[in-house]
Length: 151
Image (cartoon, rainbow, N blue to C red; front, side):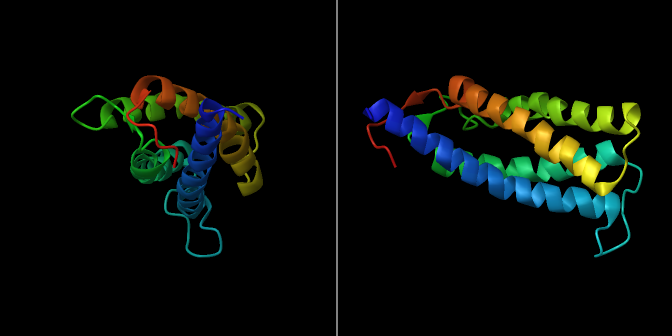
């Protein structure tokens, strides 16, 4: 495997780990906010989209830090803000995918239970968003390798 493919494989792996950590935080918060999940009474009961957006905004802040400092540390954003603005724009834009899945599940299919909400938003929607974000971050935020290091 050539250096370029090894770098890509390393970036995809690291992106998955950072995304997994941020997603875990977002999923737990989403479920606590919306369903309570045996811990507390739901804080935002019947406010699925609000719960999702708040939880994933917190997850996005976690993922930005890990993505900038670890996943794409050998790439420069070429921006004074370290790529935070385009990173945020891409996250907000790709958040539409899981929101659409959640809305479809709840409003079209009438499924409002915790399992359905999580499959729609946190399995199907996040898988679509993960692929879109990796491509867009790599293409538009952290564009070019700033050195030859691969770790």
